[in-house]
Image (cartoon, rainbow, N blue to C red):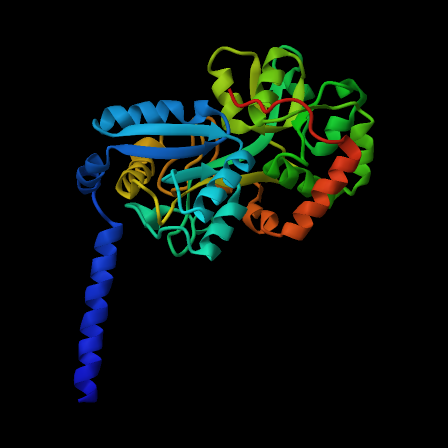
Length: 350
């Protein structure tokens, strides 16, 4: 009898595993048929709308009958709205694409995220995904150097954070506010961890410029408002470069390159769950991942032209653990605010 029960349990477990695998590995066509019945997808994207608009248009053309409602803004503006909707059980968003990994960790603990492992899941590097399938990176972003090619010759490029302290860069360096942007906070943290807080004393003496948003950083360098930065999103500056603007990127051979996965998740109570699954499955396919202009979270997709594979760089790849240490993050924000003051100006997202 015990053997019989064991065999029954084993067969049932195998069957359930097969069902789960099938549910996670739905084909594009299967998902499209289900998503067409929903007709709509509500996507919240963190950062500039321009990061998402071309993909949204392509998605709508690829899958007629599904209209995407895109809302793009800073994550710290969109998240409180989502939290309120979750609390009131009036959720209007299906999926998010944010840099704020702490929100995904928190939402997972709250039990409000859906487990979904799209096709190609096994090709995604483990540091860029939740093992339970509740969130996954759709792109790898990095904070590298950028410079105005008309103002600085290649031989004069900074090679470490300390090079930005040189007198010739006085008033010509720009970054986001570290007390306003979480990945810039991580960047500055890696710098003071290596060089000490005396770096900030010296850096503030160079009269640096500040802006809210990495699009603002990249544009300021390209326009000549600033000459250099150690805080550009590599893909954003490279995108501006392709429009014949005098800007380019560089990588330190001394300091680590901060990276993070721009991450997505579907909510359990998403009003259009099949459309959300379709979008993630489509966007994570090799065809799309090879055209994003940045590194893929997939190991089987080569880097953009001119860049090395992401793991060939000296990396700071611990953003998730850093930003989920709430006490540390808050202490750092306050300390940097003591140096810089509160953020000024409107966020640059358009």
